Amino acid sequence: MKQMALDIGLHTTPTLDSFFAGPNSAALQHLRLWTTSQMPSPVPTYLWGESGSGKSHLLRAAQTELSSSGVSVGWLDADQNERVNFDESWTAVLMDDVHLYNLEQQQLAFNWFVNALTPKSGSPRWVLAAGMLPPADLKLRDDLRSRLGWGHVYGLQVLSDTERRAVLRSEADARGLFLSDEVMSYMLSRFSRDLSSLMILLDHLDQFALQTKRAITIPLIKSMLEST
Image (cartoon, rainbow, N blue to C red; front, top):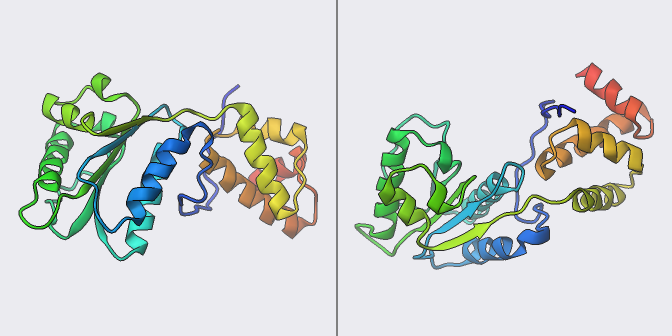
């Protein structure tokens, strides 16, 4: 059954607190340590896992955490075409979807990597990167691939259906909502299954159910989608 991508207008800012770790608790604790530390890590961190495992959520959450502390960070992803030179004021460098980088982006990522670990001034900067494949399997230039695999490497696991249901149930209960097993099965089979998308969907359902004064049912979900 084809799943629908959720694109109905509401976007929440990913945070470390909103990330349900499940089997990925070691990676979450590692990021908590370095985003709250006053000393940048001299050792890079690389997260890998299939789509829906939470890589981008964690990178965006780390960016938010660091920025809220008043520090400047560099960000690079596969959709970014503008060449941005390394900034000595950065405390950290974050690189998302490295498995999709073209040759120019790989060159820029390598330049950032070298400058972050051997800066002209100050201590080494933290490098946090993410991709779908383990470092050894990345089809990138050798010098970049070897550096991505040099430090802390965490393989993220996609949550099981049971774990997703537990998160949905817990979040719904916290909002005073009732989600039947039928509704949860519909949500998991018809929409993107990553937790960020499911939480956005739940936000919409909560608001729409309140506006229409109806319980959350499959017909309500269909009605909400037709009204957007």
